[in-house]
Structure formats: C-alpha cells, structure tokens
Length: 450
Image (cartoon, rainbow, N blue to C red; front, side, top):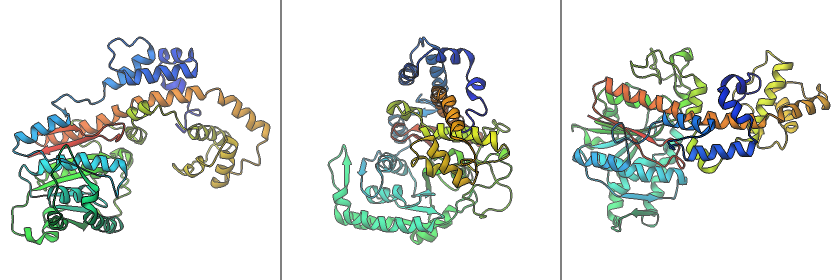
C-alpha cells in the first residue's frame, strides 16, 4: 500500500473491466456493493464485475470439505475412530485475552481428545507463557511441557499457573457439562505442566527435553503430541519437520505470522527468531513440498496472508487514513529524495497521533530527518493533498480487493504444508477449521497422526 500512488497500482494491477465498473460508482455505493459481495460470495450468479471478482477470489480459498479440511465435528469423529475420547470444553477467561481464551477453550478440548488416543503427553512448541498446556493439565489431566526460548515469557507462565491453580474453581467453567473437578484433583494436576527453555529446531530432541523435565518418564516409551497455538513464522514448518523426523507421535499445529516465513528468495536471511542458534543450511519456511519447489510468494504476499477478509467484511472495516498518509508521503519522498528509503514500520508510532496529513508529514519529516517540511511551501502541500484526495476512493477499493486475496495466499501456504506431509508418506493428514475467522483470523489447524 505504500507504493499505491507512486507505482500506479490502480491502473496497473486492477483488471480493466473491474476498474471501469468501479470508476462509475460513488465511493459509498462501491463499498456497499463490496460488503454485500463479500458476505454473500457463494451466490451462483454474481451480477456485477465487483461481485464476480470477490466470488472468484473466495472460491480459491480452503473451505470445509470433510476430506482435506474438516469441521470440528468431523475432526471429533476421526478422533473417536482412532480410539480417543472426546473431552469437554473448559472456559477460562481470566489471565488471558478474550481471543486467546476462546482459542485455548476450543483447542485444549480437541488436543486432550487427541491425546487420549495413545499419547503420553503434550509438548507445546514456542508456547510462551503456556496457556494451552496449563489448561490441558488442570482441566484434563494431560501432562504438558511448554518449550520456548524466551526466559521472561516462561517465568510469566509459571506465575500465571500458580494463579490459575489457586482460583481454578472460581474461573473455570465447563461448557455443556455440569460435573466439577474437585480441589484435590486440581492440586494433583498442578505439577503436570512444566517449562523448558530451548530454541526449537528440526534437530531438537523433544524426548530428551521431556525426560529432563519429567524424570518420572525416564525409560518409558514416550509418545508425544506436538502442539502449537499460533506458531510464528518458521516455527510452524519446524514443527512439521520434527513430526516427520519421528520426534512426535501426533501433530496439532495452528500457524501464524506468515510474513516471518523464510523463502529461498529472501537471500539466505535468517529468521529474526534464530538468534544465531542454528548452524549449517537453513530449511526454508516456504515452500516445504517438493511439488512447489521453486515457487515463490514474496514478503508482500506473505504479509497479506495474515489479513482476514472475514473480519473486515463482518466488521465493515475501512482502511485507516494512515495508509493514505503513508502513500502520499511516499509521493513527496520519491519526487524530492528519489534515492531515499524508509524502513518498514518506522512510522507506525506517529499515525495515531496525526489528525491531518500535514501533522503526519511534519512528524515523519522530523523522525526520518528528511528536511523537507520546512523547505516545501504551504501552497505546494495544499496542491498535493487536493490532487490525491480525489483518489481516496481508488485506495479504499484497492485495499478491499487486495484483502480478497489474503486467504488465497494463506491457502497456498497451508496446502504446501499438507503436501509436505503427504510426500513424506503420511495419510492421516488434514486441516481443521478450528475457530471463527472473525474472532480468530488464523483459524486452521494442521493435524497429522502416525
């Protein structure tokens, strides 16, 4: 969006029939038509160019089909067939955000059900403060190990576990079940969740970490359920590689932060999370499968994949004016300082404090030391603002059209991971649509069982 004006995206990237149709509409009319198309995209007869585009884009996104992508109910049926028992959902709203509480409520029940099919314990990769394993332990009696390289997050998790244990009967609510867990049981289960500080790579010996943290399991045949609730960047692919290398019996992973994935085209740049912990050649986060070897997305597409058309359409979210301000600033920079570059994210802190483009420009000029604000006349700025303000509609519609492609890119990433598992000989592999995408945009979990 930064180069929307300077690179002429509206004219260069929007198909002519669609562009011509939108240009004949007023802004409010075009936006209303978009909301209607985005919420009713399965219509068999889209009757406008705008509706056709939205429908075509959404039709290329993963949807529940009971084969590759399962609903939660179909996933439960599979678990039962594998010998597992479906566990109740436990709602814990305290000590975590409402979004995290909803995700943990849903995933902990399913992870506990999957665990009951023959796993010894759960290992949560990159679990931070360990919300998921904490509820698995206290609510379901499932031993769990949170593994993370952030010592501060782990320490925070230990403190939260103590609060959860002390207040469990006041804060934990069973969903669709009235039975209670007595206090003695909660006290016994409190020791089932433990922490290990380690950086997770494909070579991490999960069994050794478990044996060190759970010495009572030493000498036993440990079967690990490897979980991950929103594993950032390359940690998702790393978890899949750990499963393939027989470090785990089952995998239940929800990916996140696609913009932090590494691709071979990134020029051998290490992930920002690597911190020099790895030696030798790095495995890329995308593509993982041989089928897509040589294919590239690029960082812009990966950034887009983390957006949610479902949330935008449900909440009718218009683009922030800060997007327009940044694109307009780029026009001025390219004209007067053509060789200057601005690091991504550098100006995020000033957007919320600026009531107009003039205020934004003044703050950006000072922060970046451009020395342009005082050198450009007021009449010049007024002319630039007036000229580009007329193109606000183009920016809004481009933003919304672009949003339709977000889950298309995400679908490519998710299907690449399924292909990787299929190529390595696994059959019990599929996606599960776990969450409401409006509440939790990264709503798909990857499940694999040996």
